[in-house]
Length: 374
Image (tube, rainbow, N blue to C red):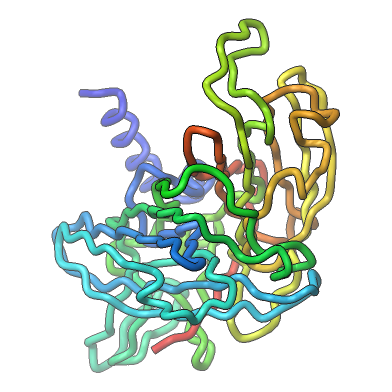
């Protein structure tokens, strides 16, 4: 038996015995199937393309509802509506579907950017209604999310040299980084997977009168496991030579042209303005020197790291070509606390890469994602 198989079997046993422990241990994953997937970015600006893949790893068919959340335009960084659009698609056992985001949205997102949430769902076929994880009843004929820890996916960005003009403003800053790097190019990463601890096919979510509320937390009635509150990543500094270090300085592999932070807030509703997600930022260079800043955004953003802190460049006081960055929401808990997820995009003279940030379980608190219901 491999170490991974042993770990997985042990985790399953412990999760069955102590669900709260499991919720703390496995807040989000890139390498295990889940009931809900988060794709941290899509980019369909101009000729740029994004395709997402969703796989049903189970032996039973299901449906998946895909919700596209758009970056809001505007100079305000305090509140804004963040438009969203959704569709429901069937998934047969072991089927993989590939969605072209530009085709799905057909120009609906004003900045051509945002993030995607997808979750398994089913229709209640019982004339008396179907029991829900929250203790309520799903009406006969209604469609709601289900526990179905068999979904995984990935996102693929095909860069063709397009970006929003610098004059197109979101939350007081340019909506997208300026175009740099090799054209054309491609980058990809796994979707962030989030599990439900309820028995398979259990109905999830709450219909609040045309709005579907999905909860993340450690309470027994929470639909999905708790999400972490802190996101962190290593990064290369814009303008830096890509070398080894800090002790052994080998030959340069290239130069970092742009480092883009991608952040999203899972505390979301499409029915009211979203207040800004405020956070503290702490960066450390490879000599363990710290740099602090504050930052805020609305719903979703993709921003050069040196716009968050102007010191984080090769010619600035950061003083090393690499470092790490941690974002901590403010406040850390409570109904107004942001629920951060994110990715990091690095553009060098050799190409573009993208990967999900590390999501730390330093603190866990409830999150609510609200979308429409059919």
